[in-house]
Image (cartoon, rainbow, N blue to C red; front, side):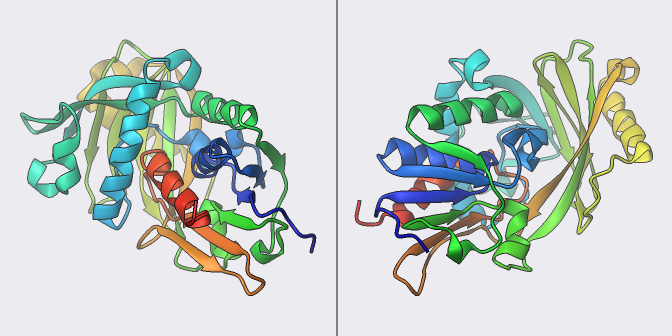
Length: 312
């Protein structure tokens, strides 16, 4: 294996966790390369709904802290929505009570109880636009992105290897604790919906949500554990439209633009830790973010950078 300079980092994984971590490291002066099995627009991150909220992620207290740190960044990025893909949008989480949330909720600006749930003006991230922006920001900071598959983390020639492989960590680490939670979306022409809406029943694989994005409306969704299928199911899609139209009837007649499926990288707890390698190099893990990868991206990225270079 070639020797790598002491500040050189290879980030494995090109989704939102990998690109955000690479940006933080590159802007701190490190030499950063991202090695990704596929381009960002083909990752799970690209098909995510993009609403900021710590959903299906553990442990709760740490996730809340990472989410709040990321919220601060997204609120700043929302000043340039066309460039960054981030906007602040009003909406309602139906069926959620403040008492059900952790202490982090008290620090979310404008989060308030309303009839039947909680309302807030939260970041909504247009993921294809945001991922492209992250990549441009990384390149400006001197980083590079390569489509390159990794089969052995310890063989990557870098002083520090950062594992942001998401669901890929199941075979790459290997870590059998990482499991897919399948999410299916229907993309429709927006019939005039300006607010987001969610209603989640944690006892069911089905949920109801719609999220307005520029030029389209995302309808969801599902949370099907241990389901690896990336093929959209027509019956599931029809049921999603029906559930959303029960909340906003105008959705029923909206023209369908696309069907999307993503596999959330679920784990009983996010793995964010430094692992010393036998040759003295470091491997830092940052994966297992479940349904909240974009929500915790900046908080996890900054903690990953601190673990990668603890003396910095």
